[in-house]
Length: 486
Image (cartoon, rainbow, N blue to C red; front, side, top):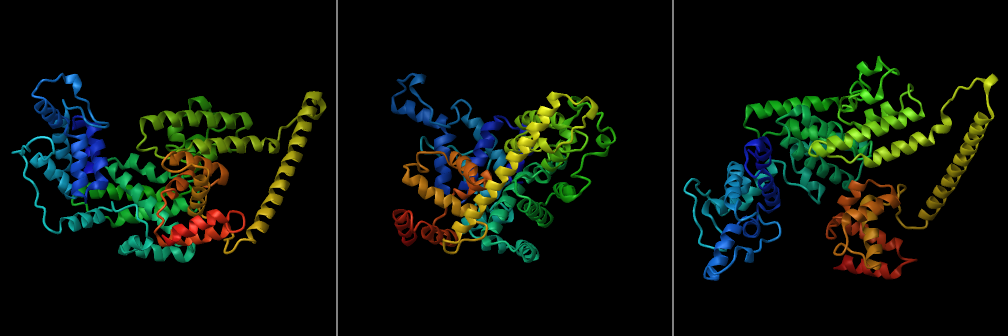
């Protein structure tokens, strides 16, 4: 059993669960590196051995308060117990062979190793790293990748790509991002697959604010589930099959609509009494939108619906962050803006014979708002026209403007000129600002900021961006060209 699945499935039986889970996830990227794995154990899981060595080096003439734990180190009083629990978790996952043997043999740099009699070390053959890598690939844990062809070497992925790209006609970067996201979500949903009825919402309620990107990710995940053959447990295979069937509802109109139970009672429903968890089928943004803009509700009711759903969403997200993994905060803000901007279009029936000066003033304000809205739209169209005209001045500019990866590189060089870099600032804050400026997806920007300058795509993007800087920022252009050459 994969370690991630074991630690989740047996969480109630694992002592010091939080420490054990953290160790498992910290060790995941180190599995093919024995030296780094051992270094992790020395720095985090052997405080008891370090304390014994500390006492010995000081002839036992120390106070316990003189011993300081390292940042992130498990307390020495429970370190041994955490190691035993960790050994139980990873014992059946052969991708953790280095960690398993370190624990079984008690290897550490502080005191003499004490082998566990209850556990035999596993054989580390000459090709052990290759075997670990192959098993990681079979488990579909070999992500993220930086080259699309690495994903397409898998037969099922290649067939999927060929069947869909002829219609979508997307570039290599788009598909690479889609597969990376799909593999990441597939990994998360498998951990929860012991309860398919909960796990389904990780996939069915996907949200990247991209109507074209989301369904292809769901389709890739379903393809991964249907072709996954590493389960030798009949029960787990059945649960994955159940999950696959549930995911098929993703594009179903019946699933994406307000439940018939509620439709029959509209508009007499008491909004405060609705179970919004079920009414939105655990916060599907398409269903949320159907509720907000249903014809039965007026402006104030629509805002109230947003508030009620949002409040419930944040409460449930705090309790189930591993199921509600998408951030809908921006979506709720956009819904409010849309509801308020549509106020002028709502039809408020007013008896003409009883129309007061107050209502006339409201109508006048609506007309004024309508005129200003038209003016804003006109200015927006003019601005877009100017943008398109300016874009023609740059070489090789696509009709859709820069890609997310190109924008990330562009801002990287701008920020570096201002003295802001990855060493003295948080990439998350970069993503927030770039999102505000460009309107691109915050999550996609955050991933794009993990820039791999040596890849073929990045080199192509660097050449393009250097040309864009030619007239206004020749010094930045020189730096980019230098980076390309290096």
